[in-house]
Length: 159
Image 1 (cartoon, rainbow, N blue to C red):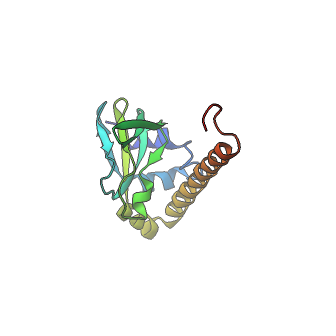
Image 2 (tube, helix red, strand yellow):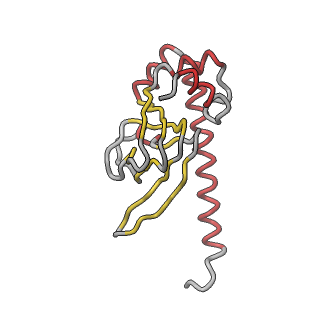
C-alpha cells in the first residue's frame, strides 16, 4: 500500500492537481480513502448506482461496456486518470465496468469529501472542481469531433 506522501508525489504533476500547492494537495488527500484493487477485480460495475468517483494512482484499468452479449473496450486508464465522476452530481447508474488490468491503488472521492474540502480547504476544492470541469470539457470536445467525423466521413463500405 502506498503512503500519503508517496501518493502526493505521484499525483503532483497530474492534470487534476497541477495547480495545487504541496500543502493544498496534502490537505485534500487527507479527506480521501485509499483503495487497493487486485488484477481482474471489478472496481465499478455497470448498472450499479454510484456514490463516488475514483482516481487511479498506480496500475492500469480498462473501461468495458456490456450490451447484448458484446463487450466494448471504451478506454484504458493510467495513473492520473479518473472515472465515475458523474456519481458526484447525479444518482444514475454506472455506464460501464471498470476492471483493474493489473494491481491498482486508487483514491475514492465521495460527495462528502468534496463538501468537507469546500468547507475546510475551499481553495483546494475549487481547484479540484475546476480541473475536473476542464478535463470533462476536453472529453466532450473530442466526442463531438468524433461524432461530426462519423457524419461527414462515414466508414467506407458501410451504408
